[in-house]
Amino acid sequence: VGVTMNTEMEFSFLEEGFSAKDIVEQKIKESSVTDDRDAFYVCDLGDVLKKHVRWMRALPRITPFYAVKCNDSLSVLKTLASLGTGFDCASKTEIQLVQSLGVDPSKIIYANPCKQVSQIKYASAHGVKMMTFDSEVELMKVARCHDNAKLVLRIATDDSKAVCRLSVKFGVPVKACRGLLERAKKLGLDVIGVSFHVGSGCTDPKAYIQAIADARCVFDIGNELGFKMDLLDIGGGFPGSDDAELQFEEITAVINPTLEKYFPADSDVKIIAEPGRFYVASAYTLVVNIIAKKVILDEDSDEEDERTNEKTVMYYVNDGVYGSFNCILYDHAHCMPTLHKKRKPDEVRYPSSIWGPTCDGLDRIVELCSLPDLQVGDWLVFENMGAYTVAASSTFNGFQKPDLHYIMSRPAWQSVQQISSQGMLPPAEESSLFEAMNHVMYPNVFPFSIALKIPLYKTSRPVV
Image (cartoon, rainbow, N blue to C red):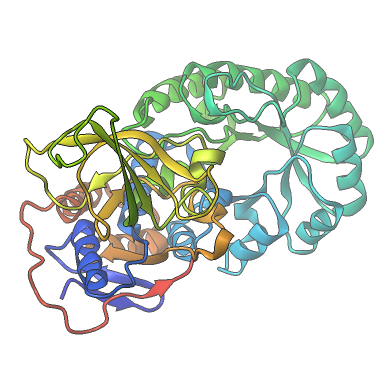
């Protein structure tokens, strides 16, 4: 049997010798014997652990506060809470969700510079003190509605090289910071630090250099005015998959020396960050089924000749931009499928497009790709689908969200428990963990040939 249930964390144990790809294959086999070939996800929570270990290796001074908006699935949040991460929340609902898992308020930053009054009051009543601001109006709201806020000034950055720019909406220019800090002083508020965000999907690591230097300037102004500035929040922008234009280690190679220059280790400044996609993007694989197909022949081709490559093909699948692929609209994602079935190397491929199931012409997943001749009932696999997908999907036109199947290997689960109880893994165990996890994710053999006769999956809907 490939998996057994862990009811506490709502995932299935991935047994030794099995990989996430094996579970995808088994789920496809199960679905293929029925007409209900619904789209589904497989999420390897062991990949979330692997990302955490990678983060702590590369950025040992920076405490991650996971950006809940990126993917608020309970199994992910439980795993991260067990690993001891903090949480970046932007609303009352996200604060409620995280605190329902027993997360201490000190591990939450209310990182929304523009907050509703009632939600500021909620944060105050539930012990959430750290929160960002970037305007005088926000300061006045906090002064009226929060008993003991620890404020973090959000500064603007150059995010022109980011996929999703944020400084168009949030952040105050450095030259305007003194006035805001003086106003906070007059209101009797406690400003403890500075935050920034270089934009989601940052493609230029140099953006961090200027932002950290600017933060140092604002720290100095705050200290001059009598604030005890001891928190730096460097935001997000970290890639979630290894096929990203900019690699994670390329960014950390810039951040670490810049921090050492402006905020050396002996400066008693706590440094946090708000990674989202970094933790979850590569953990999720989405599998969709072809529900319809349209062949468009070239006017000059022979309609009777099936072998001609003078045609284009439109494939329609059972998830789209109103569902998981909302990331195409909101996150500027470029999603390309891989084929479930192995094809012959010399098989003819045709110009193809892939469309979602709704009645909206906007619902296009892939404008142009090259695919062999596929049939209704065939499957397409989309990897790296954990970030800004399930969190913003809808049931527009009555199309339901895909089921989610969570898995984790036993070595990964044991490591999560050890980190939860003792802190970070010792170096020797960390290395053995990576070796074990790499074997689970990329086994040399394909052992999944057992006919499974019992229910294997704990299925849950995405929490949105």
